[in-house]
Image (cartoon, rainbow, N blue to C red; front, top):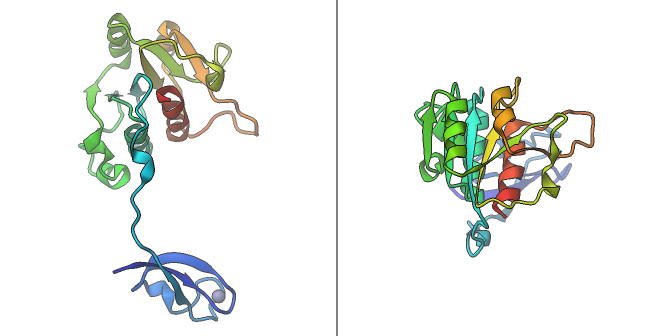
Length: 204
Ligand SMILES: [Zn+2]
């Protein structure tokens, strides 16, 4: 099967799919036209995967992330950004979860990870070992991540539960609380989305 672009001659609805895609016969939009292949797609290698080494060592602590989809998305972003280790804590699903491979698409194999039942104990250890603890969370202490100077050799980025956020006891021992500016009506981003932006910002 080859990947192609299908297009409806009647309404010009245009979409990608396989050349044996069943949607192809009748236009899924106008239901009148009979879609045709207008372009074959050739697989391309991604040129951005070379020559951009991470500027610093960034590890992450995922504390009680409820959704497997979010953990899988975080694995993909961690792989892309060059995060060196994911600490999975509490109820956070690990790559052993049956749904993880489908969401993480192989990145769960490439990023080093470990499981810890208690994120607070872990963060205390990481801090004692010299990591700077940066919690990704809103609130009074939060400073704009994109205006934060990264002066530590190893940063441990902590993200917390989708509903309750980063554990208050972890916030208390974090060197910094950083957040992304929210310019619309919502108070926060999806945790995997926020993690992705922060991971790239910190890794450089
Ligand atoms: Zn159409």
